Amino acid sequence: LAKIGLSGCAAYKPGRDEIIDLAANAASGVRLAAVYYADYQRAGSPAWEEIVELATEISSPMVLIDTFVKDGRGLFAHLNAERLHAYRQQLGRQGIRLALAGSLSYEDFPALIQVQPEVIAVRGAVCDKGRESAVISSKVNSLKKILCQLTELSL
Image (cartoon, rainbow, N blue to C red; front, side, top):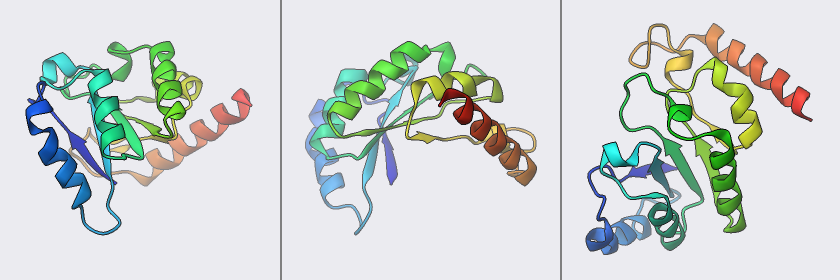
């Protein structure tokens, strides 16, 4: 998957045909995942319904919900678990999977399990000193352990 984020394209409709062409002409085996920015107003990007419409038009298998501005405010500062779960259900009815990202921390994982996304994307949470530094295998293993424990508790 290659993500397509439309920051600065709040009125993407004039460029809609180009986006559809991009999706149709992607390299063999590459599919586009539409990105909805939880802070879409700060990103100057389309609102939720427009992203869902785009994802449907380009046959995107997944929508990634992320944050655009990396200022320490994570995903849950913009959207609560209930809203995210409703988004997941809406996408599921259309056969589209949900991925969540956006400055996620270990403290966010109980809420993430509640939402039940198909993919959880992290960077800073598993890096040595923030998102621009090296990934640390012990942090990846700790995160995996937490997810396994939380998943078992929620079953």
